[in-house]
Length: 195
Image 1 (cartoon, rainbow, N blue to C red):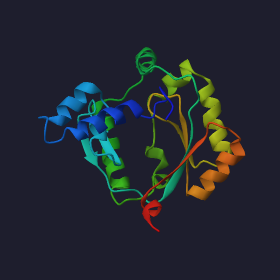
Image 2: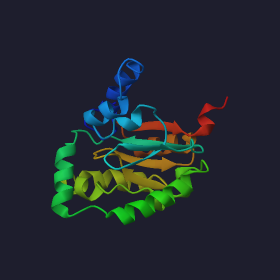
Image 3: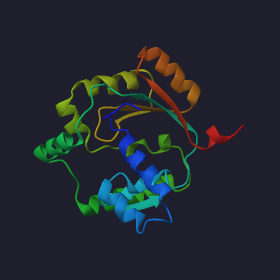
């Protein structure tokens, strides 16, 4: 996994170590939160609605089949710099709006639907800040849309652009059309587990 790509690799690694300590260390969720906001959600990796500063993790049903093409963008992007830029730009939402969005997302994802059935709820509020610091992310998002992505979005604090597709074959064809050596294709959802 690329380093500093906004894909949660460091958080996933930290949570994996903590999972090894289950039963040996008290209050793993609190320790996970102290390590980073993304770590608690990775103690039991799954699709989840995460709220607060990462301390409220609500597992959601596994979604229906879909696939993704990731364009890491190279060069990394500092999470601290992206959050500082978000503050400078005045980005953010109030608690009422976040609560309403959480309810809508819970309802949409609660039946195990594909994320492609609720693309309007797939928003990364850090995207404008990351684009301000790395305008080339916009080119990657546009390339994914041009390759047929039903939704293109920034992963984490960036710089990885993610395009969502209906299935693995469509994602693989899009990645081939992009002609990028750094493209990563991933299958997700229930169908990937079936023989």
